[in-house]
Image 1: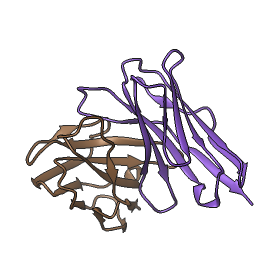
Image 2 (image 1 turned 45 degrees about the vertical axis):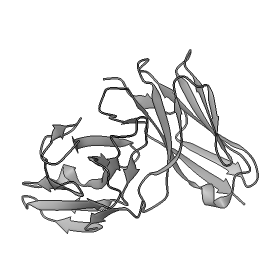
Image 3 (image 1 turned 90 degrees about the vertical axis):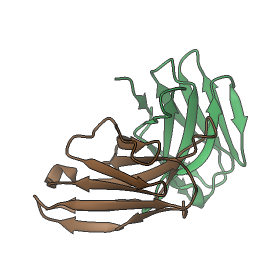
Image 4 (image 1 turned 180 degrees about the vertical axis):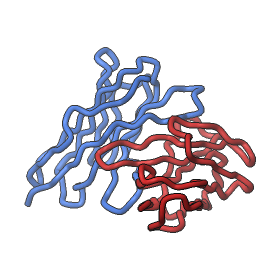
Length: 114
Length: 113
């Protein structure tokens, strides 16, 4: 979805480095999500946020942190990256005002940790 | 925890034929289901959804069928085209669960010329 932008699209870094992935949206949605996708697997939820400064842990939050300082932006941080965090990361948004609405995804960030 | 799974990891069909992609879910409390299409290098793209109070829903060339008795979901694509080649995911969620989605592992659909 072109209205959900993730940066960077690709990142290669070393073990122990701090990394931040950014997500911004122009859909006006209040809910934002971060997912991780590993090869051959579905998406797993890392963190989600319903509003500015609202943070909720997902299925696999260990080793990650997030920040939601503005409605349109939701960032994901790896404080000290490790190789098993190598994956494809997706940001998604949804609209609280409409029930039973799908989430809309960005095109992902491919992260490789050496 | 409960999860959504798929019967077949890969599916190959001839161009012009119909495709059927299946999904089994185990959480009987799930009441909203979505099919996503993911092309290489892109994020999941919404295809069609269905609520648990429905058995069938049709879109453009796609139909989703829901069988709550056996907790089974299927996506039918009519007259499959080369552009339909992608990985297809089903996802489920529960009302009141903050719309957290649980995804299946995906089926790779390949359309043969």
